[in-house]
Length: 490
Image (cartoon, rainbow, N blue to C red; front, side, top):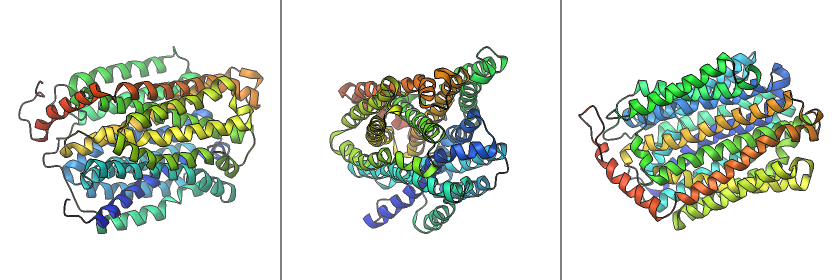
């Protein structure tokens, strides 16, 4: 793609960001609509968790497959199919007659979504090959998440209050159609010179691991930790993880190359992505239910309340990209960890829900932290990896994000449901009751912020960079086809 003009590269970046916009908007808009959907579909807290996690689980399970498939058969081709599937799934969601159908249609959306973000990131990585240009492009990419956080609650709130929750899925239709037309017109086709072979066994093991863990967490409050269902989920998760580690380490071209994780920055980016997005999804889930079910705000007013968080995330994302380009990932990661942890602490230790100034302070801190954390994750994940495997590396980062999002909703929702079932605080319909039921969940979000801080510090120094350099050298032979049935030892 070296012959592309600067203007064409910016256009390609804009088209890729458009795909991220519809996926991110879908999540933020949906969060605001949860109380209305819950009332209309007569759903429980677990039912609301599944409207989010059915999507994120399928997305997380298929991201690496989509990335490697795009490297093999063509990135534009897979990206185009993803846009079509996601847009069609959105239309079906708007027509869902029941909670079960809505969850099923959300899974169709997720199949399309799995072909968008990692493939778009792979396209960006192969379009912007100079490290500083790439970091800036990733900063713009991160700013789109901030835009969705700012616009999603407002657009969703306006649509829910005026038309109904089904209309939140309509906004994906015009954006999806525009992205499809521009993709076919302007994005050139690209493939990896030596793409990896399909790995269906690894794919099934990943799906088994993610699905069993999330299902067990969501259903544990109602089924009981010692029930056969939950114990069975734990057994499937353990067997899937053991099988994944044993099987992938012996494949010449694994779905997840274990050697990637010899790089401390790459491993750190994976942990940070899970932690940050678990904190985000849990934060949005708790605040949406609190603002509408406890404070009695409408969907639009709830969106306006969370606007400071969204605006700060939007403003800080490009700043983070520039910091990564000029000074490396350490500073934005440390500031992100401190501010996200401090935000969670305000709610966990000081009951920020009970004080509007503290509530907004928590939103501002979290927005700053989340705005700063995204660019270092993506840049660290793809930097130093062979360009031929850009789709796989980007997909691991995206999978970590979605896994974190699924776990955040599952864990926070399960903790909240357990608190509500126990009648903490004398009833969760009051601010005091909700705060008591949600307090353990806020401590979990605080821990996620601290994990970003400590892992970011540990994996961004000179030692960590040296492990990244050694890993890159070890991975270079992987760009060519391997004839033996076992990965080479280094």
